[in-house]
Image (cartoon, rainbow, N blue to C red; front, side):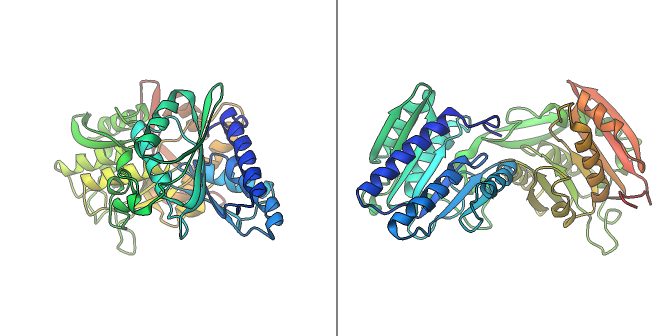
Amino acid sequence: MFSSAGLDTGTRRLLKVFSHKIDEALAAGQPLPRSVLDAGSGAGILGICAARALLALGAVQAGWDGRVRAQDRDELARVFTLYNAALNGVSPALLTAHTEPLLAGGPPEGGWDLILSNVPAKTGKPVLQDFVSRSAALLSAGGQAMIVVVSPLASLFRSRIAELRLPLVYEEQGREHWIFIYRRREHPEDQNPAGDSDRLDRSESASFLQKWPAYFRGSAGYTLEKVSYHIDAFHGVADFDTPGGAVQTAVKLLSNLKRRTERRVPAEEAEEPGTSAGGMLTPVLVFEPDQGHFPVRLAAARLEGGPAPVGRWVFSGRNILSLEAARYNTLRACGGTEITLLPAVDPALDQAALAAFGPYRLIAFFPETLPQAGGTERLDAWWAALTALLMPGGFLIAALSASGAERFDRRKPQGFIRQGDVRRMGFRARLYSRIEGGDSPGQ
């Protein structure tokens, strides 16, 4: 996660300004903000500090009954925000945490009184410009957005604030960062001309691109192992210009095994052989799908002349933008497919949530490689979870760095047979089948 080693200088500077501005508001007899949004929360520092400060200072004004919403695209950030909130005595009634895009989750009636953000620098220029316009549109009549940005982005934010004619309340330059505090326009009927949230389609049936057009990065066609497909790429998601090495290696593995093994992978079967005892098509789980290259390429291969493509997918992983991008691209490739999005840190920590949609006939696993030190226990936990999630006779494709794949393979439990192995570009992909009637952990 961002600044995982400690409190970064940008957040520290923003907290200092926040403290001074709250003191000024109290001295002037102004009300404390009651609705606070921590946009891009990371480990939750801004939201937790705001909650504790406002709760303590609220005694001056006969109590403070406000709420803080923390949001981040990373499920691990949500988990750590809640953990750190509890560690600092901030209850779930006071602070809630959510895995969602920036400025998602409808504001309270009347808008946010305060939006705090150490704005993600690498999220893409369109997203940054959209952040300014939408954050201003989501503020209450007297609300403020207090943000910190790295110095190279200061001119972009200043220009955007001026372009939208937003009242710039305060700005401060540091050695590496700038602070900006701005409000929404004075007259609601003359709201922001661009990026206004009212102009976006927030309906349940709307696609990710319709809901969040600023995240769109570009479109391109790709060919992997003689199968062509199309991807719309989105900011904030890896593999935006080319499929990652792990995905390319996994696809190469399936291609090499096509004549003798791939046709046995349940994802490649027609609906009837892949159905469960209850008659419902058993799902396929893709863990960390990025832009969706793997499921889209798999669907494209089936549409070119094989049986029906996968009917039920579960996309899981830390980045909600990745899950949304993968769903968007997969639906474009094979409409009518049922897709469930499930933010998760890893299969072991989120096994119960994943099991609610399983068992799975195929799991495509693209994890981050664990560090050598202390990784064995986590690898064993992964294998235990994957064994419990995979149906007997099902298949597991695991693709990660070459060294990580070796360590992962060495921890393989009984009940799995390796069916294939491909190494390329510093990555390694292996296909495992779970033996029919093989024991699950604890059995």
